[in-house]
Image (tube, rainbow, N blue to C red; front, side, top):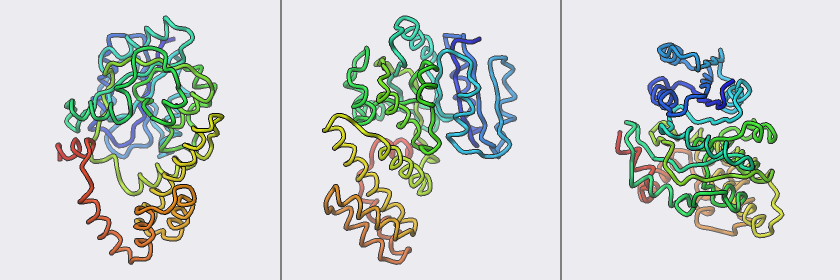
Length: 329
């Protein structure tokens, strides 16, 4: 049996998948299996995968689309290694990722998972150093030092500084928390880390850029945003914190997520549901310019809503993610 199971769930990313797969095959640590789970891709993914004649690769092709979380779960269920990592088909591991993270888990039996920092890369697989630094600062990775993470609940829920794709887990700890909840589909990475923290698991951080996370123009859409935000509402609503301040923060985060979801639903044309969510959020957040803006939008014809949002977004500051996406268009 291999010590490490690496899982890459994929769907219609035949043009990006080779970069992800080769990043695993080029690891300096070789005791692994690579499980590629294909969620019924309509492109030439199967043909692309046939190029690798490597006994360590296990290709699982689902005949039809079963959904993101179920596809991820199928790779986890097929895994046989003591250690497990899942990362997306548009991302990659640096050559020493497994060597360095496995060494920690081998040496420290009390540690359940090992996280690392990651590079931001663009559609051409080029590393974006400025965006990498901004990303680390935004999520507080630049404040973490090497060693056991002192307050895992705050780090996963409040700061969201950890990332599943740059983390190697003991498979046993994932089995204990039932890995991916199907109700969290679209927000399963955030949910998994929070639930591990609430279960009292121990995380270790390596402040090295040992993974590559890609920004490109096929990651965001209105449909995807609504799916993600709906799942995040479910997740945040399902937690309960003993710490009074953290519990207050949970309610604020829940209200803030409902507010954003409400506006996105209004943008889609679901005015009634959107207004209800804005009303719920305002009970915690109070009246705000964003809520009033969303409320006014909900009474406009759909064409005028889209026009107003397009104009509004032109004045929104461009962040590092937008810069990376625009750089390769």
